[in-house]
Image (cartoon, rainbow, N blue to C red):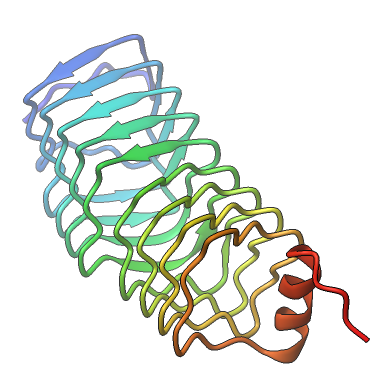
Amino acid sequence: MVRMADSSLTENERFVEVDFYDTDLDGRRFVSCRFNGCDFTEKTMAATVFEGCAFFNCRFNDAQLEQVAFTGCTLSDCGFFMATLAGCKLSGSTFADCSWTHAVVRGGQWPMVTMRQAKLDGLDLSDVRLAEADLSESSLKRVVFDDADLTGATLRGCDLREADLRGARVDSVNLAGARFGSTRMDVDGALAVAVAQGIVIG
């Protein structure tokens, strides 16, 4: 168990191969901290805030994250296998080579998040705000975007086969080179995408 300072704020600390399973992180705030090889497996966190932090090779597998915020963070080689993210805020964070297999997402604020070349197949991203997100060259097969906000997002080179974009807001989305196949989209969304690609209708 990690002993934390009495203050709810932790700044400029470095955590190496720490197991946080028995540590109470609810409501805590971490600013400019670095986490290397840390274990958050099966961890339940609520209203925890990470600002400008860096995570390398950390495990969030089967974690329950409720209204947790990663703002302006960098996460590299981190695992979110079977993790649940409920109402989480990932604004301006970068995820590189992270695994999302069988993750559960329940809404949330993900504007300006960067997840290039991510493998997000089968995720349900309904009600997630992804405005100006960069998902370039990501695999989004069978992803559900019901009521998601993709305004200004970059989906350049993405694999959108069997994805469901019905109800999604897709104004000014960049779909250059995206791959489609049995992709579902409502009429308004299809028209918005066509206009964004320079197609003149009528």
